[in-house]
Length: 202
Image 1 (spheres, rainbow, N blue to C red):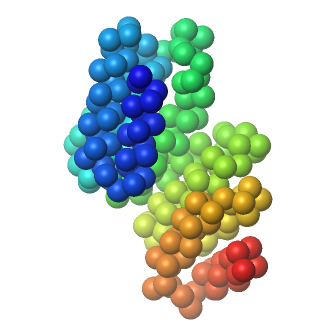
Image 2 (cartoon, rainbow, N blue to C red):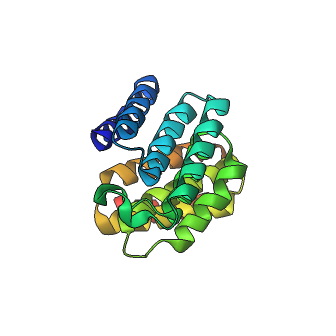
């Protein structure tokens, strides 16, 4: 039940319904507590809640949910094997990168950039779909910080990975990021990225 509700929370967030996403994440936590409050499960669920608060631009609630997620993750150390199979993907790397994405959604790119960059550095290269999505968020944070060269490099990585796995969703994110680069349309890094995008996406 907690797993299903957490997935529904994530979908609600992607569909632009963050208030529903918060409620679903909290219901997922209630379901997990009723089943014994396994700390790795609770860590993941608190981060789902943080995503939703970030979309609502509720900084205090987002930071509190991130703190709870970290606390629960620390509690889970040494007991990962006790967690359900469906949550064992949620390791320290995933905690780092998802926390960074929450901060990027919240509009705190200086906090987000190092976390997402470190997560990407740690991730296995065969995790192409996840890496494509994370590279997009890294580029987004870097663009917010005015780091145009770095943003175009990260966006190029997202583009290459999206093309390799044929992901329309990530390609759409990259195109949206390109639209946000329009104020810098005559800058060399953006011109080079545009050329790369035309070659990859047509």
